[in-house]
Image: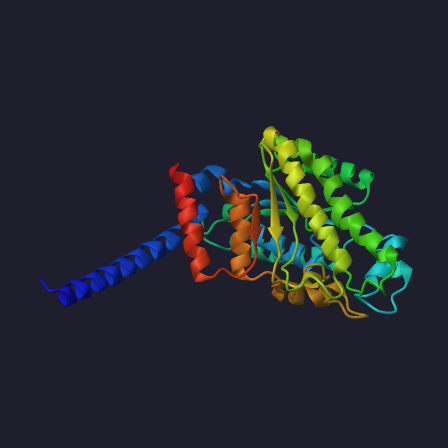
Length: 355
């Protein structure tokens, strides 16, 4: 065999090896994707029987979307809402709706909770009409319990703990997950924004996260559940108008790392969700479908058809993994996965499980 033929064969072998390797990586990636839906670990979670999770704020677009998604998976969802917005929040919420008076900020049930309730009732009415032998039965859907939660107030958190305990079914004394969706993002340049708005953001984003962790730790410890916090956004978003918010979110990341060391030995997993490319202010917007003079009956159909979509489908799958997988990672990103990152993730996960 001459040198030229040997070189051609070598190149062909290298090309063939690359193709085989790429196919193997692709198969690993496909196997790893949403593996919690099919593996034995997912079945052992017994989600269909109503694992209980708390979403600290279902008023926000993120919290509302997550509550709807988790009920569709079969979870028993405790959906929190702030019972009353106090004076120190009036100017903060004014950016969402101009010319609003103080007494307009006080309402017993926010619109997001009405949307949740309407959707769940509509879904239940549909499932009851299914035949008894149908594959899709009522047990495949979760349930919803709305409750007032103000993460900045100790008394409100203690009352929320009591409400959760009263609504847990017999034999289930704890929570599988607490997801801190309560938050605030107020844009403004550092040299122009009022420092009172910084205080408000740190109060709910940082101190509220710590208060929530402390209040619900006993319920999480019973189930050896997981505490899920919202971390920092991507570098592209950090900067103009988001200095104070970014500082608050990085404080949450640091606190989550410290909590991981402190309560990890108790069996509680602490997970950080980095929102990355998703605009932070969209996470905490409130749905507003009601118009002046409209009656609740006029809104039912609109509530049922309303579908929040601040988090893309791949982001929701990532959150599913954080909640459901047997060995969750310390941090997850909601950024859109690339082909290469999928390959690397698949290899690392396979290597981790083979150890």
